[in-house]
Image 1 (cartoon, rainbow, N blue to C red):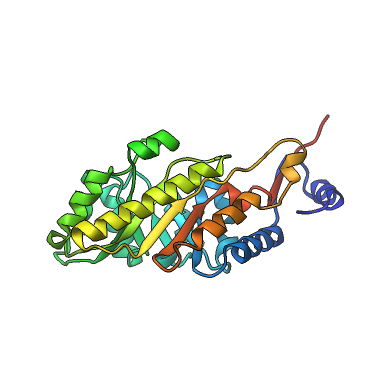
Image 2 (cartoon, helix red, strand yellow):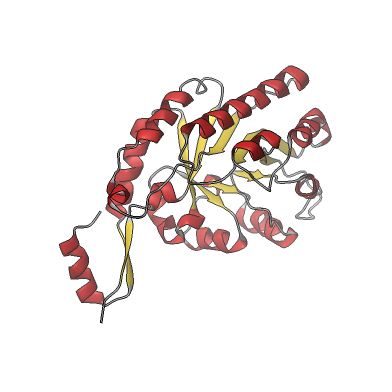
Length: 276
């Protein structure tokens, strides 16, 4: 991050209050994280953490998790590659999906948070009478997830199994795998380990019962970020290294995407204000 002297210089030049975002610090952090995770893992930036970093991510070879029409509009403005977008969020209106399909050529992958959402994307949402093949990820949720993290959104196991079992009825959907995010600021690695093991077990059962092999596993680990005290400057990546070691067991089975927001950018900016 910028030195104190540089921060003071910028504050004197532009006055306060102001936000200072450090693109060089961001690039260094992303490269360090990628080096720890190794090959076979893609980062997906949950842009709600800080939309002002969207442009800075464009040359860092990451995806973007987009949760709202407003966030998608930012990606349009910044000319983000549509194939790098994971269109998430529980508020997918018909007009928004039509805009994505008709005006933007579609995006890389969509998440389906409910059976209602699944039904919507199978009903030719752009109204052109064609079968647009849409890649989807089914967000997982279960009693297990509620026990270890809690998540009010997403399909439960039975919903996922029903969609996979009847997937031939939906030729316009290319079901790519499972996405799961249960919360953030997880300070116990056992929670993350338990969730990944559950996801892997779910994918194994989908293959055993229905012959469906999940190609992609997208997971939001919710790694913690400290904001206060000396620990806010402690950048040892200990829990990330534990996660990297665990993921080595799954790299041959899945294309793995880790969806993270504040963990990627929290150390790459400061808010500066003056004291009268």
